Length: 325
Image 1 (cartoon, rainbow, N blue to C red):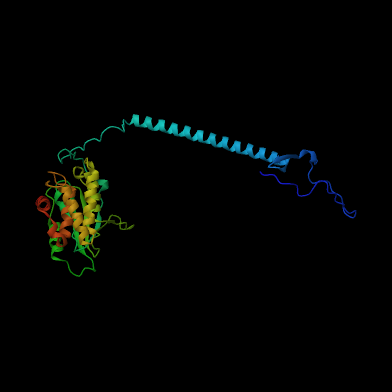
Image 2 (tube, rainbow, N blue to C red; image 1 turned 90 degrees about the vertical axis):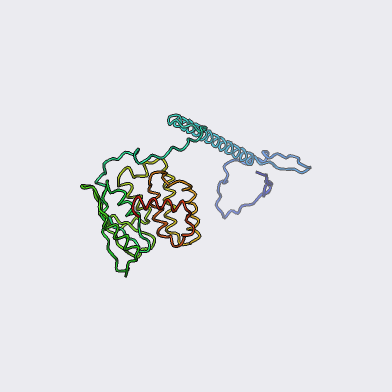
């Protein structure tokens, strides 16, 4: 702090009137005029106050204590970081992870014969309701019914909501095919599906609990649900390329629900690049992606018919032959 000259000279005598009470000095320390030292700085006399020196010393001590505490805190943080680094290195060693190892090549897809056909858990089988628009026929239900005919029976009953005055020819053909198709094997586990033709647009709904009414929206998501509770050999989550399958299913969902024609064309080109020259998205075996792709393209075919390349048409033809779409 900088020093100031005394406001009042110590030699000034102030006469106190006798009509007032006398009080002791507020400052208990005795005032010693000799404590002030005159220093010559630039030819001018500067008075140094001992109290100012004491204040400077206290401030310096406080600053040194704060710096010491900050240094100790920093040291503790560095020590904790070092311990955390050692724990991560030990975990990486235990899990046999090497950050410098090259990426492992993707493994080949498992065929249907390589997947173990486990018994179906009957506790996962429950009846559900599907609300679908006649303009967006859920062909994947018919595909799964025919694909699972030797393992699980999807018993479908169709009804028409009052908001739909008349079914299209496409919806009538689908309804006749899915209700007349019966399983060839007896004593199979069964799921009862109630299909209601309703004006829900492209957002096909699946309701598993009528009391809570929490729908599963989107035909692709219905396929995901059924693949988990259906025959294990058709569950795509047992494959080695689950992320790729989910990406293709998401693209099929966008292809169906995007109303802009340019966006649909872009999504179709993306699916075409993923399909490439292969017979299907699952290779030689019919996969859930092939069913979802075929169903989505058939529902929006009138808007993107000219953008379907020959290999896409070949893939859809194979699905139609195998599962009867």
